[in-house]
Length: 451
Ligand code: B12
Ligand code: SF4
Image (tube, rainbow, N blue to C red):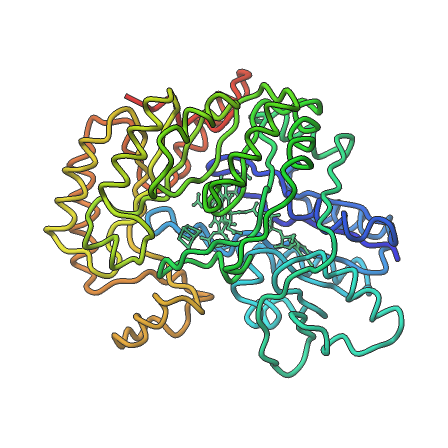
């Protein structure tokens, strides 16, 4: 079949992100089907041109990749649902081929997206399973019987489903869109495993990738990293929910980078839990440069309330180890979730002062997603706003006055500190990053803010 895959993400905050998910979808489809990718991040959006391109390819099936529902940032709030509806309208105008939707945004809100966009099919979880859906469609079978697949029509219960075949990434350096990412920051990304074993109250990641950790073969990952470098990447971002969730695997991957002579800098998300003493030193020896800690709070009471798998002592120890290894460090904090009070906020800000040489990204309030413990808490606390978390970008709140206090307190304390950033920085940060990329700078660039 001729399969058109459309990456609908056009967000360039904090920077444009290579649509790695489609590489995996193509990896599963490639031996059996002809695929073409249109990446809407790489060009000025023009519905007429898009319609013409779709007509020219004349697909038998269209796959829409939906990455972000919204910015998940209460200070720079923006929803993308309207944008996806517009794109869907163009697709429908251009072709009568069935449309399948998938991607992280879809996996979080499958029923809602099916209804809003009027797609024919949806795949929750691993997109590799598109190959199974196409097989059923070609044979005239019942697609709704496939686990993790939704069809248009009456709602059926659906939960994340995984691909049990070999996971293969079909990265093609000659795909026209690759050049766009190389020119705009030079960051290409890499996945080394799927899933996260932890259970933080607000987190959607288990809805997308599951709780079970599925590690990829380090030898293959090392080769892929080298392929990205040879294609011209200037930085590799590891997309795993938590790179060190499986400590031994993360070390094996880093060593595979070294064996494959990967010499460009790389980074990813880490959990500041108990680490072997030489962990970051070994990582740094294999080229790791940027550590992004999903810290959330610097107060033990709040960490416990958020169900984080670490305590404050471990945050400071991990930070020090990363510092000693000469790494750039960022901490992501979520202010105002369940358990936050004036006192806990003060404790977090006082402790933030003690974290030397790092960037702190402050997100205010927690975005409420269905299927998370936070959603159950919000409903239990009778928060009227918690029943429509899709179309409204809903954030946990106990009292609106309290939210103002949070934001004001952090803003006052962050005055004069360029390394304390609100959310992902919004438009202002987007402009600065774009300007630096146009002058040839590469990588995530947040390290420039370190004081
Ligand atoms: C790594 C990451 C980042 C990194 C990306 C770095 C980089 N260079 O890649 C950084 C930190 C920069 C980042 C930024 C943001 N992120 Co982010 N990020 C992630 C994370 C952890 C992994 C994404 C990833 O690459 N996964 C690996 C690939 C292989 O998986 P995938 O894309 O989901 O694709 C699979 C399936 O979804 C499916 N699939 C994909 N496309 C299609 C298409 C079809 C047709 C089908 C059938 C299937 C299918 O098949 C693929 C293979 O199985 C996810 C959480 C998660 N676990 O998914 C959040 C996540 C995607 N991010 C999210 C958000 C909100 C953001 C930001 C908007 C935050 C902000 N305000 O700054 C920005 C947006 C950036 C941008 N320009 O788009 C949300 C999106 C959902 C939502 N809440 O709206 C997520 C889900 C986290 C969350 N809070 O819930 N992010
Ligand atoms: S460690 Fe990170 S990815 Fe894992 S559950 Fe907690 S917030 Fe989610």
